[in-house]
Length: 153
Image 1: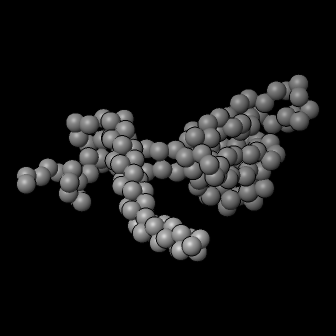
Image 2: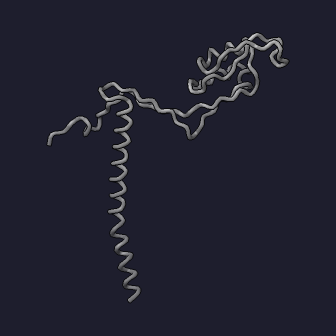
Image 3: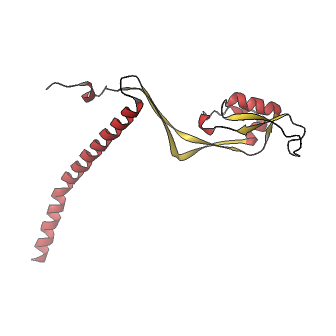
């Protein structure tokens, strides 16, 4: 029987496939000026610097502050914790039921095609497993039925 690459255990139409949990970032207190600049260095693209409002009492005496801009871009780096003020002002967690998948294709199949094909394969393997479990449990079910019939007699 002639085979193709899909049947081989080493077959992989994907260059990189990974997942991570979605970050959840909370600013516990405002981060201003030099600390805001340092935070931007540790997590680029996650925070944005905005000019402080001179009319606001909480922002008075400060030039700029960091605000949350894009949690998705967070790499979960803990380098900000080296700065005592930042470690008290920023909390980074993960959302346990929100996954971010990344699939890169290095073949003629697109990443979407790879995902859909892998789901189809997983469904087929799950069905095969369930059929195998059912087949294994049939002899036990038959013997239980026979015991019940003997008890009735």
